[in-house]
Length: 371
Image (cartoon, rainbow, N blue to C red; front, side, top):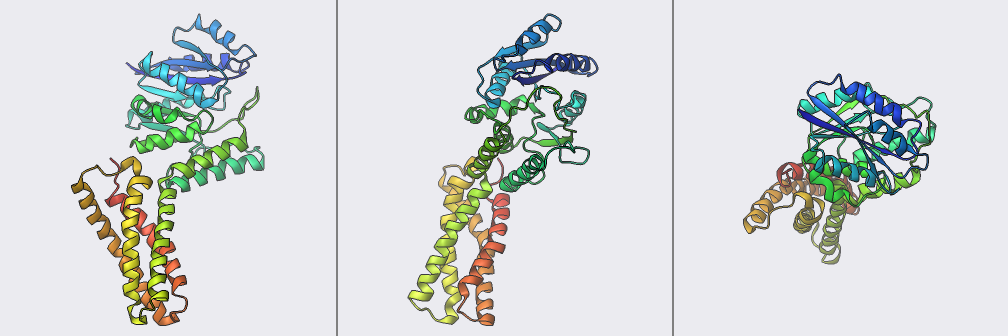
């Protein structure tokens, strides 16, 4: 029988934990084909949450209690995940809040998605059928909705709607391959880091709708400002698209610099502006190839064989031919119509609006494909 282990981190959840544990074990009796086990990871709660769990352990053999220091959500999950994988032999691990914000009744929906082939299932508040509380304050709605939009755009993973959801089911192989990366994250940004790393490991991600419910008892532990700042920093430092954009800016600077040198310093003839554009753009292409391979797409960089680099560079150059043609034709066409004085303005808009998105899409499809 397959085993699903539900990890519940707690800190001062004495008013919720007993009811949640009983609800989960009652539900487990109705789920066929899966054995359900629970791990409560308590961060030395002064309200004696752990005492309530110990009492219930006498009734439920599949209930486990781990105690840890108060070091953040990520640390608690890492301890629970390690126990679930190494001691319990979990096939699937759930993340779940202790305060009934996450409805236990949708657990069969998660497992159904897993049985259908998903590796990572997210309970999403932002797909059809999901929702957030209507009485949330405007600032909380803004941070939740806008924050997820920023993450989606930053990683260029628009189809995943809820990066910050704490209700998830994840196959064991995904967690095993991600643990080393996750050791660096102790707070709520752990959730974003886990999903990002899982995608880089080519996990198949699905979503189910959930209705998020505000807690009735206890106090939320999240520090919104700290969470948002850590999350934005994580996206900025780990997004392939943002790295690609930075490389693109550097490449564009090389491109502009050489064009300026040839056109303005060496005073090349107007009818040879196209040649200056080709020379400067090709120099940028060579820079971009190596910078993207070793930085932007480092998680899927090319193997260290000369033949691999040579073949990949040929493909890279072939993709870049379209960009070079667009630039050369565009700069000559626009300077012929509007004059040569503002050639740099035309070049800027051609690169920003056409070349960067065109190249990012094709480089991902042709050069740095997922392994």
